[in-house]
Image (cartoon, rainbow, N blue to C red):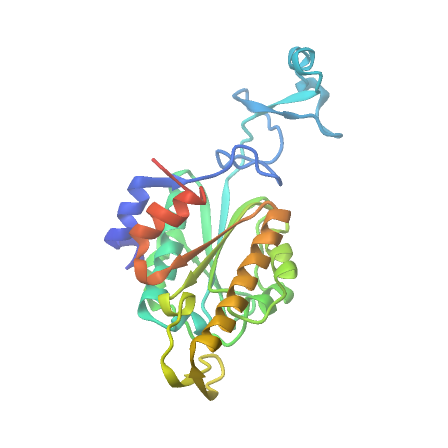
Length: 285
């Protein structure tokens, strides 16, 4: 079960969520709310924006910096996290890929739970509205079939996921489905306080090798195609993959989101230590 997976437990004990101190949309540095709140516990400063309570203006900071600053206080609301797990057939191309997807979902949820969050894992497949898995039911992730024919883009267009406003939003997918990256990222970023896009690929998907005549089967449709996997074919594929990743990254920057690509074959431990830590999605506890 993901919740009792040794790698997941080790990761949860060694790392914490790398939440920014001041996200672009809303406040979540300590999984706090967006506004200034009413608690007397001071948190930090930010620049004054129209509509802010002028009673929280710090005139001494204005004298030092010539900028209007407001004091932020802990807002006493329940923190939230949405984990969006792609359960389409393309995520089942290898046991390692499915395992990584399940482990990541459990890991992010458990890390959020440690901070007092109320995480939900939304299974993005064919069901509308999308079903969810709660923290107390993580064991059911083992029974989730990666067999859906629908795509994340279609579900978002159908409003199949009831996003929580100002939630931390983590998306786990290979993103190898037909979509327009700008539109997809914009939909995912809507009213999120933090957005992380975690692309999970197999080693072969990230870096295929020439193998001559090969029969490829579209795992989504079952259609078969005979191709000759020479270096020219592979170079074209890798260029398209890189173009997709660069376009996703471009739109993530525009929406203050963070994209990262993981190789499932390397395992969760390496992913946490390397890519997720470098992207500052995770920090050492």
